[in-house]
Length: 284
Image (cartoon, rainbow, N blue to C red; front, side, top):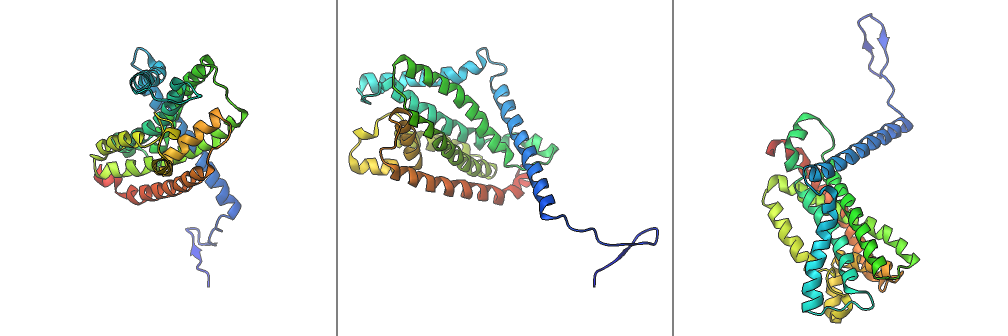
């Protein structure tokens, strides 16, 4: 028998009906729109804060990859005579560094996104996952500037780019999801253990050398090549290069392996973040 509630006026008030499926869906969609707008605003604020008081501002997003490419280009191209034929080595290297820097910088930014915003978390409530997501998105904005530099070098060296290069967009989306998954993990763990930040920097340095960023995978012995491409970032980087410069994948198997890893890492990272999220306020 349904319970009835008697109001102050003595009348009988029936329980308010539960919102229907359509109403819940509209509320959910509105919440997603609001959080997406918050992520965008935080990402823009991150970029503005990063370059606000610097003399060169956003030009650092161009200078940094150029400087890194110049150093590694001299070491590997001039001293060790690394080969990437038929692609000029400077273009080959800059391509790898452009996509690698998005991943590495995104993970590093996400690592301190929660612990570095304790004051903001104490003021207002919003889903904490917004912070590492905005950090990765901010580094994606930097990546877009670096991509312009890469396009200039491709044009200067007259490297042909095929229409199949458009397929790099879903692969880039895969890299974004993988970066977010790792970012969620390290952001949550860094709240509990503050030395995670140092550990992440070390692991990223090792990870870069075990990924085909500075060397062509075709120059590696077959057995070791398989190991390097089973590394999810190795498969993603190789697919991005293949699509940009040849328009097709040399071996789709490694991309399917990377896609599986991406799905697992994203879901696991989000689950770990949600599990640790309730203790954020206690620890900080």
